[in-house]
Each structure stands twice: as structure tokens, then as C-alpha cells.
Image 1: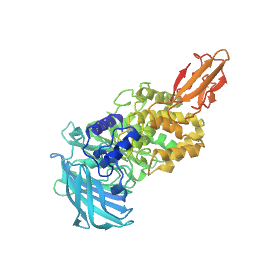
Image 2: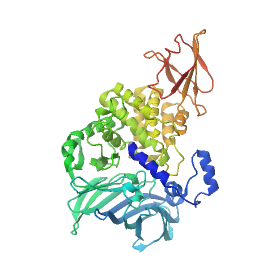
Image 3: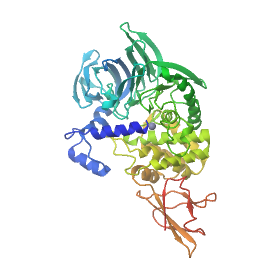
Image 4: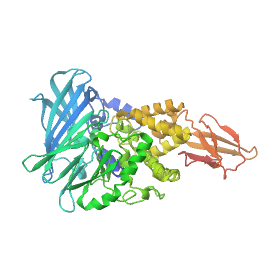
Amino acid sequence: MICRVLITSVAVLALGGSSACSRGVSQNQSVALAAQLQGPPPTRSEILRGDYGRLRANNDLVYYHLDVRVDPDKKFISGKNTIRFRMLSDDNRVQIDLHPSLDVDRILLDGAPLQYTREESAVFIDFPRKLRKDSTYAIDFQYSGTPLDIRARGGIGFRRDSTGHPFINTVCEGVGSSTWWPSKDQWHDEVDSMRISVSIPNGLTDVSNGAFVGKMDLGDGYTRWDWNVHYPINSYDVSMNIGDYVHFTDTYKDMTLDFYVLRDSLEKARAQFTQAKGMLAAYEHYFGEYPFKKDGYKLVEATNAGMEHQSAVTYGNGFKNGYGGRDWTGVGVSPKFDFIIIHESGHEWFGNAVSASDRSDMWIHEGWTTYLEVLYVEYTFGYDDALKYVNGYKTKVLNRQPIIPPGGLMRTPPQDMYFKGALMLNTLRNVVNDDRRWFALLHDLYQHFKYKNISTDDIVAFFNQRTGRNLTPVFNQYLRHTAIPTLELKFDSAAKTVSYRWKADEPGFAMPIRIGTKGAWQIVEPTTAKWKTMPARLTPETFDVATDLYFVNVVKQ
Ligand SMILES: [Zn+2]
């Protein structure tokens, strides 16, 4: 996802306050938890949305068939989601989510209606008899209504293009998939595969995730478009894009690239979308094959600026380089490429293939993908541009709150997860200080975690194991504290020495760094514990620190 959308979702969250004390967590527990994690106490809404409690953890998603009909004139949707899941423990209740703006019509198990209760977006479904551990069940969840529009902080945008045709896109990472379809609206669990069927008025095209299966004239003025997703998929990645699209293709190696744009955009898109091939070449170079080959790679013009919908990346960057035509990092590099193609497609590797299992760890999507931009620049334009590009992000870092907020509440991390996250990874490259090992580590980390939902601890453990260093305090300082580390330097001109140590919030923080003279750096290993001293003929004015390689503050005294 890109920041403009991210900021919108923060606003949604701020407005989404709630009421009384909770069922799962008592008020006292909530207050204690919040104090411990330095955030406002969790609201009932946050717990309903974010907690991966018993009624979600008792089952494991296997398959969805979302079959939805969209009436663009009435802005009305109706349909069903067939949800297949395997029970992980004996239970007679599960939580599925659907926004209160939409009606539950019926929920069926083997054709028989089930009882349910609703609270905000949660739908608690009760079964007449206990569902058994290790058994698989399928329910049909039928629903209809007028979903909240994006302008009302929903997940669906009903627009028209310049010629008056309906132009409808979904984007729901912040507000949740349940704003437009019944789903297990959380990050922990993904279906193994999915079918998406979208029925729309004849003449329009739907582009959803996955491989195109076919379309069928329903004989009532509507056509159903069917798509098969062959891989695990986050619920917020599931999308429909409905419009008067034209379709053109390109090829990359043995893969067909499918592009869908509005009629007026065709010539601009034919020129701009050639960048998809360079993007694929760069990311495949560092991480390995495009992760969703059976589903293909699609770029789809949309009303949102851009979103990483799995295998159907949506695009709204105006067919211009930079971000919205601007030099995004202000250092002359981003006008060389289309930011949205490069960033959103990078999420196919980090975000969609490697996914965070809780929204609080969203830096695994955004920090990594921002770093993937840097790697794209390095692969395409060279190391000097990449270093310039990543350092250009420093002006966007705010350092006002830790990157990782309290977990289990669907709180959106601050935008530092993008830029500070990427700068932290650039720092770690120089801690490893061996590019061959660094790129092998990146490649293997991706391969190890692809198609999995993981936590920050999984990433840190992988780094520690592969580098043989305890990098936990380094990750903690950048991700779990507000400030970046400060290198303190104390000069003694009479003794011709400099003393150095780290000032950091994280106990035991230690990190090597290059100091002295550019081109003839000395690597030292400061700690927070005590000053270390080394000879230095340089004065404080001429003594340098490689701050373009490490994201740190320097204080000289
Ligand atoms: Zn993103």
C-alpha cells in the first residue's frame, strides 16, 4: 500500500472508537495491557477487529468462493461467500466478519440455516452441534446491501469514468475486507486458494485476483466473470475492478503480463507499463521467481493511487514517473521510474508472499517493500543512485512513536514503518558488511518465509542465525523505540584520541559502524556500556561517520 491510503486508514481508526467494556478482555486487563505497551487502552471495536482469540483461532481457513453480484446504478451488492475451514479444536461457535452496513441474509451449513449474533463487524455463528477438531466444514454466508463507499471510509468506490461508464474498485487494507464481503477479516489466517466470481452488467469487465477462468452470460443482462487464485491470499488483497477496460499483454520470460486500462489510457499505458518487465527482472534477481506465476501478473488501472492486490496490482499513478509525477524522495532518482509500479509490485514478494500475521508487524510489508525500491534502483541504475535514494527517505522519518504498535488490535503502525524500516535494512547491510552474504541472506529469508504469515521475531531470529550476531537489540531499537541510536564521540586533542559509545534506549544495544575518513573507514564496535578509546589525529570537524550507510545520529563533544 502507499502512504496516501495509509494516512486515510489512520484517520479511519481514529474515528472508529467504541464503547463499553469487552467480553474477551476485562477493563482492568485492558488498562494494564495498554500501560505495558504504551498506547491508549484498547477499545471494544479494536478487540473485535484485531484480537485473534478463541473464535478465530479454533479454525484454519481452507478455501473461499466469493460469488458477488454488483449493481452499479443502485450501488448495491449481493451474493455469498462459501467458507471452508478446518477446526483446530472442538467448538460450536466461530467469528466471521461483515460490516454493519451490509445485511446477513442467511448462513447455511449443509443447507440448514445457522443462528448468529452480530456486534459491530463481528458475526458470531453458532452451530447446533459441536464441530470436531481436524474435521473440515463449509458454510454458505449469504449477504446483501449497500456497502460503505470509499468516501465514507468503506472498501469500495463506485465511480464513473469520463465517458460515463461505471468504474468500481475495491481497496480495503485499512478498513478491512468485511466492508464489502463476509470474511475472516484478520491477518493471521489465509485460505489456501480461492475462487472469485463477479457478476456485472454486460459490456463491463471485472478484473480480480488470480487466473482468468472464463465469463458466462447469465441471460438477464449480467455476465459473471470467474477468477481462480491458486495461492494463499490475505483477505484485504481480494479485489474487484469493474470498468470499461481494454486489455493488452506483454511477455516476461515464459509469463504473460496482463494489463487492463480505461480506453483513453491505452497509448500511455502501453509505454509506461513496459517498466513491469524491469521490475520483475530486478526482484527476481534478488529474491527468486515471481511468487504467483499460476495466477499471472496484472496491472489494473484504478481510482486509487495504488494497491498491491495479489497478482492484480491496482494502478492510479497517471502513467507518469515518480509518485503522482513528483520527485518522491527529492534527490533526482525517483523521476527515473514509476513509483507505483515498482512499490506496489514489490509487495508481491513482501506483503503477499511473505505476510505479517498481525497488523502491528506491518513493517514486514512496508519497510521491506520500501527497501525493495532501493534494490530496484541499485539493479537498474547502480549503487550510487540507490544510496542517494534510500538516504532521500531520511527527510520523511518522524521518530514520534515506535514502528511496532501494540498487537492484536489492528492498529496501523506509523508511516515510519516505510522509510525508517528501509533505512534500518540499509543499516543492517552495512552491519553485515559483506554484500555477497547480505544478498544471500535476503534471498534465503524470502525463500524461507514465502507463502507464510510471520512475525517480527521470525525475521530477527533468521537474521541472528544467519549472521551469527545478536541483532535483537538493533531491531528492537529501530522498531520498538521512538529514537534512532546516537553515536557519541568525545575528542581529547592533547592525547590525540577519540572516545565513542552508543546512546540508545534498548539495553545491550551494540552495532559496528564506520568512522574516521571516507574511503579509509575504520570499523569500530561501540556499545552502550562504556566508552572505548582509539587514537585519532583528526579534529572533531574533520572526523567523519558513515551516516549514509547507517541511520544514526552523531554527537561530537
Ligand atoms: Zn506499500
